[in-house]
Amino acid sequence: MRWLLTICVALLAGFAGAAGWSLSGLGDSRTREYLLAHPDVLPEAIAVLEQQQQQTRIAPLRAQLERPFPGAVLGNPQGAVTLVAFSDYACGFCRRSMDDVAALIAANPDLKVVLREYPILSPASGDAAQMALAAAAQGRYAAFHDAMFRLGPPSPESIAAAAKTAGVTGAGTDDPAIRQELQANAALAAQLGINGTPAWIVGDRMLNGAVGAEALGEAIAAARGATT
Image 1 (cartoon, helix red, strand yellow):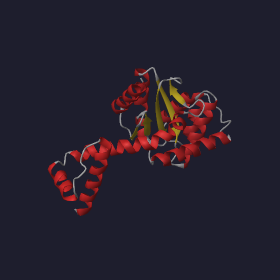
Image 2: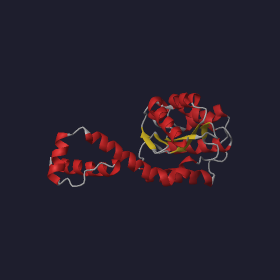
Image 3: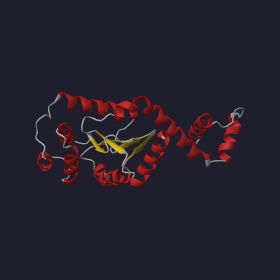
Image 4: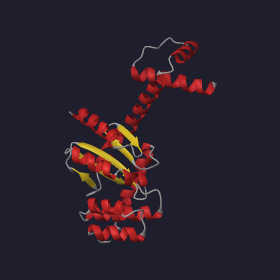
Protein backbone atom coordinates (compact mmCIF):
# COMPACT_ATOMS: atom_id res chain seq x y z
CA MET A 1 0.00 0.00 0.00
CA ARG A 2 2.91 2.37 0.77
CA TRP A 3 4.24 2.06 -2.80
CA LEU A 4 0.83 3.02 -4.16
CA LEU A 5 0.71 6.08 -1.94
CA THR A 6 4.21 7.05 -3.10
CA ILE A 7 3.11 6.86 -6.73
CA CYS A 8 -0.03 8.84 -5.97
CA VAL A 9 1.97 11.56 -4.24
CA ALA A 10 4.34 11.75 -7.21
CA LEU A 11 1.42 11.96 -9.61
CA LEU A 12 -0.26 14.66 -7.60
CA ALA A 13 2.97 16.63 -7.36
CA GLY A 14 3.41 16.38 -11.12
CA PHE A 15 -0.19 17.33 -11.71
CA ALA A 16 0.16 20.29 -9.43
CA GLY A 17 3.03 21.57 -11.56
CA ALA A 18 1.29 20.78 -14.85
CA ALA A 19 -2.02 22.33 -13.95
CA GLY A 20 -0.63 25.23 -11.95
CA TRP A 21 -2.31 24.22 -8.70
CA SER A 22 -1.11 26.05 -5.62
CA LEU A 23 -0.21 23.11 -3.41
CA SER A 24 3.20 24.38 -2.36
CA GLY A 25 3.63 24.12 1.35
CA LEU A 26 1.77 20.85 1.66
CA GLY A 27 3.89 18.40 3.61
CA ASP A 28 3.81 14.67 3.01
CA SER A 29 1.15 14.09 5.65
CA ARG A 30 -1.09 16.81 4.27
CA THR A 31 -0.59 15.48 0.72
CA ARG A 32 -1.65 12.05 1.97
CA GLU A 33 -4.69 13.56 3.63
CA TYR A 34 -5.57 15.44 0.46
CA LEU A 35 -5.33 12.28 -1.64
CA LEU A 36 -7.44 10.29 0.78
CA ALA A 37 -10.05 13.05 0.84
CA HIS A 38 -10.01 13.65 -2.94
CA PRO A 39 -9.19 10.35 -4.69
CA ASP A 40 -11.16 11.56 -7.70
CA VAL A 41 -8.26 13.82 -8.72
CA LEU A 42 -6.01 10.88 -9.56
CA PRO A 43 -7.53 9.91 -12.94
CA GLU A 44 -7.44 13.56 -13.98
CA ALA A 45 -3.84 13.87 -12.79
CA ILE A 46 -2.79 10.78 -14.68
CA ALA A 47 -4.51 12.01 -17.86
CA VAL A 48 -2.80 15.40 -17.66
CA LEU A 49 0.61 13.85 -17.08
CA GLU A 50 0.17 11.38 -19.94
CA GLN A 51 -0.83 14.21 -22.26
CA GLN A 52 2.20 16.22 -21.21
CA GLN A 53 4.47 13.25 -21.85
CA GLN A 54 2.91 12.69 -25.26
CA GLN A 55 3.43 16.32 -26.24
CA THR A 56 7.07 16.16 -25.12
CA ARG A 57 7.72 13.06 -27.22
CA ILE A 58 5.77 14.15 -30.32
CA ALA A 59 6.92 17.77 -30.68
CA PRO A 60 10.53 17.19 -31.81
CA LEU A 61 9.43 14.41 -34.19
CA ARG A 62 6.41 16.11 -35.75
CA ALA A 63 8.00 17.11 -39.06
CA GLN A 64 9.37 13.62 -39.63
CA LEU A 65 6.14 11.95 -38.54
CA GLU A 66 3.98 14.02 -40.87
CA ARG A 67 6.27 13.69 -43.90
CA PRO A 68 5.07 10.58 -45.76
CA PHE A 69 7.05 8.14 -47.80
CA PRO A 70 6.30 9.44 -51.32
CA GLY A 71 2.85 8.21 -52.23
CA ALA A 72 2.05 6.50 -48.89
CA VAL A 73 -0.78 8.83 -48.03
CA LEU A 74 -4.57 8.65 -48.00
CA GLY A 75 -7.13 11.44 -48.06
CA ASN A 76 -6.02 14.93 -49.05
CA PRO A 77 -2.24 14.98 -49.66
CA GLN A 78 -2.29 18.75 -49.05
CA GLY A 79 -4.60 18.55 -46.04
CA ALA A 80 -4.28 21.01 -43.19
CA VAL A 81 -4.75 18.31 -40.53
CA THR A 82 -2.56 15.20 -40.47
CA LEU A 83 -3.41 11.84 -38.95
CA VAL A 84 -0.39 9.55 -38.70
CA ALA A 85 -1.07 5.82 -38.49
CA PHE A 86 1.46 3.12 -37.58
CA SER A 87 0.07 -0.04 -39.14
CA ASP A 88 0.81 -3.72 -39.80
CA TYR A 89 -1.03 -5.79 -42.43
CA ALA A 90 -1.11 -8.76 -40.05
CA CYS A 91 -2.93 -6.66 -37.43
CA GLY A 92 -6.62 -7.46 -37.06
CA PHE A 93 -7.23 -4.21 -35.20
CA CYS A 94 -5.65 -2.29 -38.10
CA ARG A 95 -7.99 -4.11 -40.49
CA ARG A 96 -10.94 -3.27 -38.25
CA SER A 97 -9.94 0.41 -38.35
CA MET A 98 -10.01 0.63 -42.16
CA ASP A 99 -13.64 1.67 -42.32
CA ASP A 100 -13.10 4.24 -39.55
CA VAL A 101 -10.30 5.87 -41.55
CA ALA A 102 -12.43 5.88 -44.71
CA ALA A 103 -15.29 7.52 -42.80
CA LEU A 104 -12.97 10.16 -41.34
CA ILE A 105 -11.55 10.98 -44.78
CA ALA A 106 -15.08 11.34 -46.18
CA ALA A 107 -16.11 13.62 -43.30
CA ASN A 108 -12.93 15.73 -43.30
CA PRO A 109 -11.89 17.02 -46.73
CA ASP A 110 -8.84 18.69 -45.16
CA LEU A 111 -7.52 15.44 -43.63
CA LYS A 112 -4.20 13.92 -44.72
CA VAL A 113 -3.58 10.39 -43.48
CA VAL A 114 0.11 9.45 -43.39
CA LEU A 115 0.63 5.68 -43.21
CA ARG A 116 3.78 4.52 -41.48
CA GLU A 117 4.40 0.86 -42.28
CA TYR A 118 5.39 -0.83 -39.02
CA PRO A 119 5.60 -4.59 -39.66
CA ILE A 120 6.18 -6.21 -36.29
CA LEU A 121 3.82 -9.19 -36.16
CA SER A 122 5.25 -11.64 -38.69
CA PRO A 123 7.91 -11.99 -41.40
CA ALA A 124 5.11 -11.78 -43.97
CA SER A 125 4.17 -8.39 -42.50
CA GLY A 126 7.55 -7.12 -43.66
CA ASP A 127 7.01 -8.50 -47.16
CA ALA A 128 3.60 -6.84 -47.35
CA ALA A 129 5.03 -3.54 -46.11
CA GLN A 130 7.76 -3.63 -48.75
CA MET A 131 5.18 -4.27 -51.47
CA ALA A 132 3.01 -1.44 -50.09
CA LEU A 133 5.88 1.03 -50.35
CA ALA A 134 6.69 -0.23 -53.85
CA ALA A 135 3.02 0.39 -54.65
CA ALA A 136 3.38 3.93 -53.27
CA ALA A 137 6.29 4.55 -55.64
CA GLN A 138 4.06 3.35 -58.47
CA GLY A 139 1.16 5.60 -57.45
CA ARG A 140 -0.97 2.61 -56.35
CA TYR A 141 -0.64 2.77 -52.58
CA ALA A 142 -4.30 3.26 -51.69
CA ALA A 143 -5.39 0.42 -53.99
CA PHE A 144 -2.82 -2.00 -52.57
CA HIS A 145 -3.48 -0.94 -48.97
CA ASP A 146 -7.18 -1.64 -49.37
CA ALA A 147 -6.70 -4.91 -51.23
CA MET A 148 -4.09 -6.22 -48.78
CA PHE A 149 -6.36 -5.75 -45.80
CA ARG A 150 -9.42 -7.09 -47.62
CA LEU A 151 -7.60 -10.27 -48.67
CA GLY A 152 -6.69 -11.30 -45.16
CA PRO A 153 -3.43 -11.93 -43.26
CA PRO A 154 -0.27 -11.43 -45.31
CA SER A 155 1.20 -14.46 -47.04
CA PRO A 156 3.02 -14.86 -50.35
CA GLU A 157 -0.32 -15.67 -51.96
CA SER A 158 -2.32 -12.79 -50.46
CA ILE A 159 0.47 -10.28 -51.16
CA ALA A 160 0.66 -11.38 -54.79
CA ALA A 161 -3.13 -11.23 -55.09
CA ALA A 162 -3.29 -7.75 -53.57
CA ALA A 163 -0.55 -6.53 -55.90
CA LYS A 164 -2.41 -7.96 -58.89
CA THR A 165 -5.68 -6.39 -57.77
CA ALA A 166 -4.00 -3.00 -57.33
CA GLY A 167 -2.04 -3.22 -60.58
CA VAL A 168 1.31 -3.21 -58.79
CA THR A 169 4.43 -4.93 -60.09
CA GLY A 170 7.00 -6.41 -57.74
CA ALA A 171 9.64 -4.10 -59.13
CA GLY A 172 11.24 -1.85 -56.55
CA THR A 173 10.60 -3.90 -53.41
CA ASP A 174 14.36 -4.15 -52.90
CA ASP A 175 14.85 -0.39 -53.22
CA PRO A 176 17.18 0.82 -50.42
CA ALA A 177 14.75 3.71 -49.81
CA ILE A 178 12.13 1.19 -48.74
CA ARG A 179 14.45 -0.46 -46.23
CA GLN A 180 15.43 2.95 -44.92
CA GLU A 181 11.76 3.92 -44.52
CA LEU A 182 10.96 0.79 -42.52
CA GLN A 183 14.00 1.36 -40.30
CA ALA A 184 13.00 4.99 -39.79
CA ASN A 185 9.45 3.97 -38.86
CA ALA A 186 10.77 1.49 -36.30
CA ALA A 187 13.02 4.19 -34.83
CA LEU A 188 10.12 6.64 -34.61
CA ALA A 189 7.96 4.04 -32.89
CA ALA A 190 10.70 3.38 -30.35
CA GLN A 191 11.11 7.08 -29.60
CA LEU A 192 7.36 7.45 -29.11
CA GLY A 193 7.03 4.33 -26.98
CA ILE A 194 4.86 2.56 -29.58
CA ASN A 195 5.07 -1.21 -29.35
CA GLY A 196 1.81 -2.25 -31.00
CA THR A 197 -0.52 -1.43 -33.85
CA PRO A 198 -2.50 0.49 -34.75
CA ALA A 199 -1.07 3.62 -33.17
CA TRP A 200 -2.27 7.08 -34.12
CA ILE A 201 -0.71 10.53 -33.88
CA VAL A 202 -2.76 13.64 -34.50
CA GLY A 203 -1.80 17.05 -33.22
CA ASP A 204 -0.32 16.61 -29.74
CA ARG A 205 -2.17 13.38 -29.05
CA MET A 206 -1.27 9.73 -29.41
CA LEU A 207 -3.93 7.03 -29.35
CA ASN A 208 -3.30 3.29 -29.27
CA GLY A 209 -5.44 0.50 -30.63
CA ALA A 210 -8.69 0.36 -32.56
CA VAL A 211 -10.11 3.36 -30.74
CA GLY A 212 -12.88 4.00 -33.27
CA ALA A 213 -13.91 6.84 -35.54
CA GLU A 214 -15.42 8.92 -32.74
CA ALA A 215 -12.23 9.13 -30.66
CA LEU A 216 -10.11 9.80 -33.74
CA GLY A 217 -12.59 12.41 -34.93
CA GLU A 218 -12.40 14.23 -31.62
CA ALA A 219 -8.60 14.28 -31.81
CA ILE A 220 -8.75 15.55 -35.40
CA ALA A 221 -11.14 18.33 -34.39
CA ALA A 222 -8.86 19.30 -31.51
CA ALA A 223 -5.83 19.41 -33.81
CA ARG A 224 -7.73 21.50 -36.34
CA GLY A 225 -8.73 23.94 -33.62
CA ALA A 226 -5.12 24.25 -32.51
CA THR A 227 -4.03 25.28 -36.01
CA THR A 228 -6.72 27.90 -36.63
